[in-house]
Length: 241
Image (tube, rainbow, N blue to C red; front, side, top):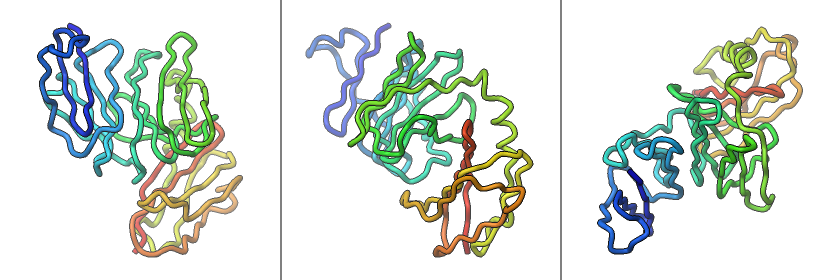
């Protein structure tokens, strides 16, 4: 079966019997919120789809050819979802999403998005493509041209990903003063964003074993903390009250 998807304005249609013909029986696809910015069909399973929308849910996945949809925003920050693409290079379904501030990816059977900052600028991403032959992710950006980086390789990420997941934030919620407890002895970059994507705290090369306390001078509300080494990054939610 060949599945063809067609986007007309804010509407989406599908057909399985001749997408090259304008008189093919196209059926309307619904079950998600917002208008579609990007559509990605899984490279080996035509019934598995992902869409990036302008709704508050950002991203949806369908496993039945668009008959039903599941929102998978999870812990994505409140940036605009502009581009989406599947990758199966390393025998795992990995979904990349380009936003108006950088690229994120979601691993199979997980609920936490990870910022993919290695070799990519934190700018608006208008299109993403995967080159399976050279194992590269190609990213079209606003004002920074076309970028090419290695795809995320889950087979080589285990140790550092495991250790960075041990990062603890306490107290949380806090009054804006909290500590980061992390046993891995590496320098980190710390970024904190508000729900609109505005950077409200930034520091490079912090040694958490020597200086673990953060003072966030910001209004009460929800924030997103990003801590990364040269190889990994983790995002955690912060509540200031």
